[in-house]
Length: 359
Image (cartoon, rainbow, N blue to C red; front, top):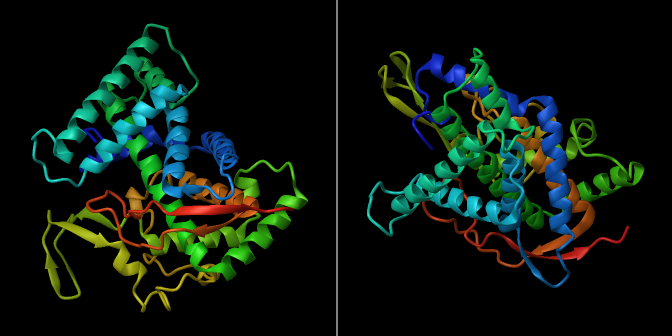
């Protein structure tokens, strides 16, 4: 993702500076705008789902989330540009955990070449904007304006480029995978699906012109629990590398300062001492708040995911549109995963057939 990426910032002052500079993308105004855009793209995509035809959930979810993030970051809206950018970002994502062998044909090499193309595109966009040939009200423009004013939270060009790429990757890959798992879990748990549908249809009928946003989401408590349970079980971010800041001891293990420790979130999410019947999809377990440090979907502490609210809102919007528009059946029950993927995702992509709901 780049040496200047927020994910690679190990020095706390540097990390805080980057985090503060990027936080504007996730303020309430931006969140509302992003969710409305995502919702519109979701409705548009689902309007093309036809009875009897197979829809690959991951493919559509990936496209919707990527386009939302791209438009909010850089106002990209040309289909050819978006398709090309999405293909390159996918290649980069696939290379993150690949063996670092710089030989043509390897995943790592393909990822490096894709990164070069994305960086070249970003530099061209930045150049055009500075020449006054492409000015938009988006996050990139706000970063460039801060850089010109030399404000305290301004970023260098390399920091802007690396972190736009970071936001592109983190803003769509994890959410699309989580949405896919959510569809699978609901297919396997029809009682939960029907309860959810009843509640959301009632809400949709009472407010037919409701605009999806924080206010509307506050009226979807059970839907929020479904999202949390899907995130717990899928654990799309399965581990968190952390550097020990001082010598310490955990359960008899001595950890020295400077050691890298991987926090195994998946193990915690499936620990029966933490969650009763952890393999059961049971959203109502979140009627009570989880124990501290037991729900690590978004990390914790100073490095909690910046996009925590955007991710939750997008998943809830997708869920609301899905259960109030269709019933569905998963056509391939295979649960095998794509090997060496950045986030756990189904090899099948979760193909479904849909039946429209007549209200």
